[in-house]
Image (cartoon, rainbow, N blue to C red; front, side, top):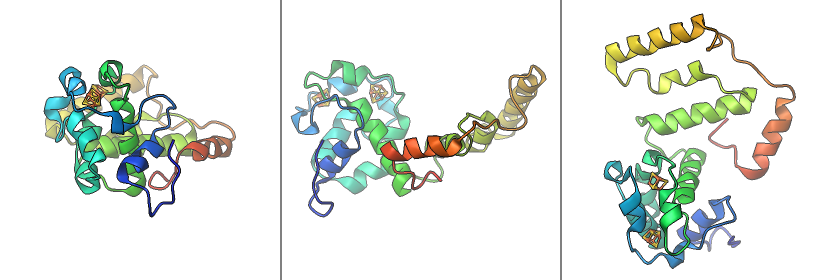
Length: 191
Ligand code: SF4
Ligand code: SF4
């Protein structure tokens, strides 16, 4: 892990400091072979393929990287990390950039994935439990009126079978959970 003063740190070092996993080689080892892109099932939907994204990070193109939809399109399949011949973990880079984007509030407000992620993280930080109805506003209007009706029917069915609670559950001592999370993640942008 790189530790430098914030004003001297490069964008690559900034991203590497966000990689919470201890495994994975430094991004400087990327040889631009495109193996990660070849195995990525989501590459065609990304503004920048995994190879391009790593190249842009190494080139210090921060604005372009942070404006990309790539890390919000990642399906977290880890194929890229499995196959990279240099031991880089592009999947962890995708997670790191998503966290960074939430933290800094740089994501496009019209995108479903960051809105969903932020609602999920906030719910966990407030209650310690997942509460699906709280995430619905992030996607329920995406399918237009028919999609909304479909989602509501599904919710009613789940509720009738006791699979969807009306009121969110809450764990005891939520403060302890928040303190634990705060030790590894900045909570700015999530609260
Ligand atoms: S597979 Fe690894 S070395 Fe090849 S382009 Fe992707 S990150 Fe770089
Ligand atoms: S983890 Fe993400 S970037 Fe990597 S191959 Fe899977 S979808 Fe693509």
